[in-house]
Length: 625
Image 1 (cartoon, rainbow, N blue to C red):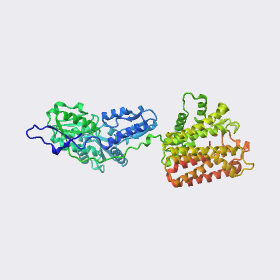
Image 2 (image 1 turned 90 degrees about the horizontal axis):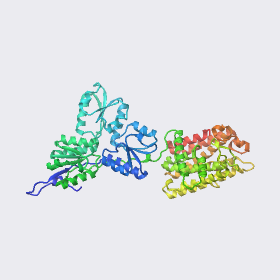
Image 3 (image 1 turned 135 degrees about the vertical axis):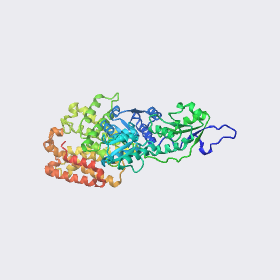
Image 4 (image 1 turned 60 degrees about the vertical axis):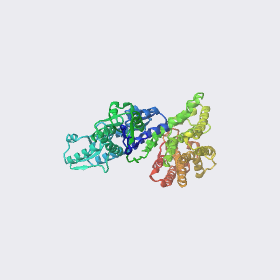
C-alpha cells in the first residue's frame, strides 16, 4: 500500500482537511510468525498433503484457512493425527506431554515454536531446577501459557496477571521466586507486575533480557506514538490473538478511548470511521499485510488519506525450522531400538517395492514376500543407515538402499537353500521357499528379487543425483557377481582339495563380506566424506564382513537350531572347511576378537559419532542367531 509520510500531511488552502489514516510502523507479521507459516508451506511443498498441525499455527483465521486450502489439516489434539503422519506444533509452544504423545504415535514431528517462547521455556526449567517457585506473568488459558506450564511438574509455576493474583498466593515473603513473562503480554502491565513481585518477595530472580517479544514491544510503542493523535484506532487482527487484544488496550491507555479490533475491511465500523478525523491503523504480529492493504483500500474509498508513520524497520530474522524430522528417522538409543524401528521401516519399503500391480503373477509376488518379509536381522540395512547417518546422508534414501540389499540377501538365501546348493529345509525358523512353494517358484522369486534390487537403486527416489545412482548400481553388481556373492558361492561349492585358511577367508570375504562391504560403501555415497574417511570405512567393512562370517561358522558348531532358525552342524557333516574347522572354536574366537579390534581401530577417526557402527560390530561378534 503506497502511503505518504506522516510529516507531509497537508491540505490545500480553503479546502476541508481530508480524514487521515495514520499507519503504525512497524505492524503485522513478526519473524516468528512468518517462520511458523513457512514451515507448514515448505512441508506441504516437499511432502505433499496432508500435513497435520496441532492447534492454530498462529492466531489468525485467514492464515489458517489459507494453509487449509493448500492441504494442511488442523487438529486440537495429537490423538486425532494418524500414526506415522507428518505433524507440526504451533508457534505458541507445546507441553512436554504433547511431544511424548506424538512420539508414542510415531509421528514425524516438527516443532514450529517461536524461538522467543522457547527462551521462556528454558528459563522456567532452569529456575525450577534451581529450586525457585516461578511466577509466570500471563493470561491463564492462553496457549503459550499452557505450553509453558507443561515444561515442569504441576504446581511449580503460578500464573499471575494482576496484583490481586499475587495476594492470593500462599507463599511466604521469604520464598525464593523467579518471574517470566508471556511474550505477548502488555509491556506497561508487565512492568507493573514485576514491580509488585519485587515488593512482595525478598529473593526475586528474573530474565537477563525482557521476555516480551520484540515485535510485541515495537508494535505497542509504535501505536503509543500515534494513538494520542487519533479519534479512532483500528487494530487488524483475530479475536484469538492475545497481542491483537493487547494493542487495543495499549491504544486506550495511550489516550484514544475508541479502539477496536477488526479482522478485515468487511468489519469496518462505518459510523465511527465517518465520524473520525484521524484514524490510527495497526496490525497484530499474526496479521498478514494483505488484511492491512484491504482496510487501507476501503478507507481510501471513503475519502481517507493513508499516511505511513515513521518507524525503525525490523531486521530480526530467525533461522528456518529444520525439516529433517519430516524424513523418516532411525531411532536413537540402543541397538535393539534401532533394529526394531528399522525392521518395521524396511518391511514397509520392501512390501511397497514388490507392489500389487495388476497383471503380475500373484504366486510370484507371494513368494517374493515370503522370502523378504517377516524375519531377518536386517543387519546390512541398519549398516547402510548407520553409515549414512555418520556422513550426513538421508535416512529415507538409506532405507531404499537397505531394501535393495535385503532383496539381494533374500535372493542369495533362497538360492543357497535349493537342493542343488545346500538343500536346506529351514530358514529363519520357517520352511525354506522351495519347500513352501516349489523349486521353480523359488528360482524365479530369487531372479525377480535380484532384478528388483537394481530397479530400486535406479529410481530417482533413491538419490536425486543420477551419477550416484549409477555408482550404487555398479557397486552392487560387483558385490553380486564373480568377485562377490556368485564367486564366493562357487568357491564354497568347489573348494581346493586342501584349502588353506587364506582360501577359506577369501571365500567368506566374497560370499558374506561382499554385501556388508556394499552396505558400508553405499552408505558413504549418501552423504559427504573425505577420501581418508571412506578408506577407513571400507577397511572397517572388510573386517566386519569376515567377523560376521566367522561368527556364522561358530554358530554352526555351538548354536541352538531353535535360536539360529536353521539346521546346525551341517558344515561338519558336509566336510566343509569353515573357520572353526581350520582354527578350532578357540582359534576362531581369537580371530574374531582380532577382527573386532581392527573394526574399532578403523572407526577411531570418527570419534563418538561412530557409536552405532561400534554397536553393530559388537553385535556381529556376540550374536546368537
